[in-house]
Image (cartoon, rainbow, N blue to C red; front, side, top):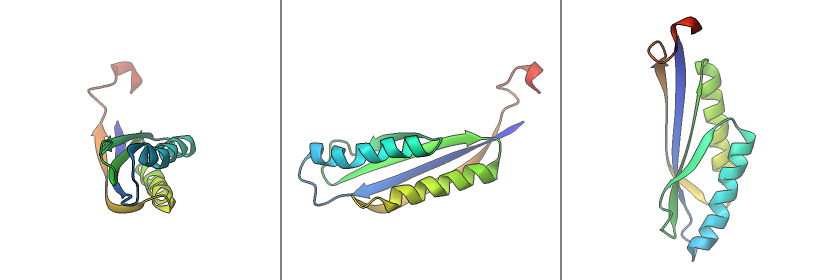
Length: 108
């Protein structure tokens, strides 16, 4: 049995932001809207103590690689469409994960 794990990270730049509170007010609602709209786990990954940038990421797992890729692309487009920042670097991948050793024998 196989599953597909989709991973996405993006560097968001906001050089005009003057405080961490202002930056959090831009990034946190975007992450919350992303979670509400797509079946992903999302987090602020790096740069929380920096004013001008932050790295965010999300992931999802499913049994259909086409579905995983479609959701990844749509969620990535959603992140990029937000006007509060610039997406300057992205990384994404889909990895095949074998579940044979993780599931009990009666599942197959």
